[in-house]
Length: 344
Image (cartoon, rainbow, N blue to C red; front, side, top):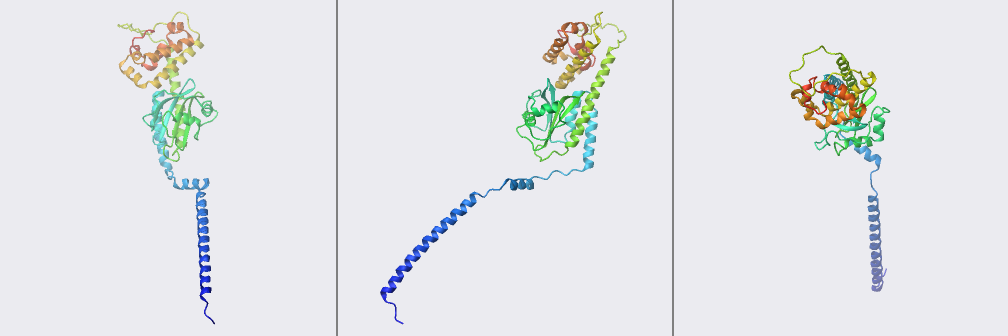
């Protein structure tokens, strides 16, 4: 076999070179296409909602495991605490204290003219709104206030409105319960889980709320009995040596209509209870040291104006229903503790 000629070898080398160049170009094209396809696929690699929910569930801290007997002991201690209340303001303060082992955060809102107003709270930031701050009832809160639903157990406009007075952080789990008296909502209790995924004992909180509502009725009934006892004329006593402007005056010769008197006494008791709820420190000071009017001048004048607007100035001047109930409920039946007032 003859050796290839130099010209044939040169031709084969040229063809091989062109083929290698072509192959390298194709390899580069394929590599670029593969890289582009891989990067495009990576850009579409996002976890779906189901996977995110599963990961969140797996990563959430486990709910605290509670001993049923321990929960029963906590409820029993809470009931013992609220049952020792001596008045409605004391009852609400004890309720917040009793909720400490049952809910991380809690707040009470008193109903004033149909609007929830902040009364007290525990577990929220110190930058919370001042006492008495109110919120306009949302539709879901209206359902609760009107008794058309027993509670709110989910995040809603009502929860957002109430908690906004206390914190910028909304918890994952919550409950809002009404406190009722004579089938009317008089206050709302909000509890939430704070940083926990769930409320530890919502059913125990509801039981405590029902017990508190029953105690509200019991305390109110006790006041009604005291008011009836007041209607019995006391035995005559010697006149006091020192005259005080707040001393009760004898009623006029003409008697007041029984129905009107009952309604007037009922409104006066409500006004006095509102003062007792919102200003417990000042009332406690007045009971100990006197001069209730000096401590709550604007509030007492405003409450009396509400009474007079309803029943007239003559009724209060002649029968002193509002003044006498103030002395009885807020001054421990001591007229001197009311202090000098312009309208007594």
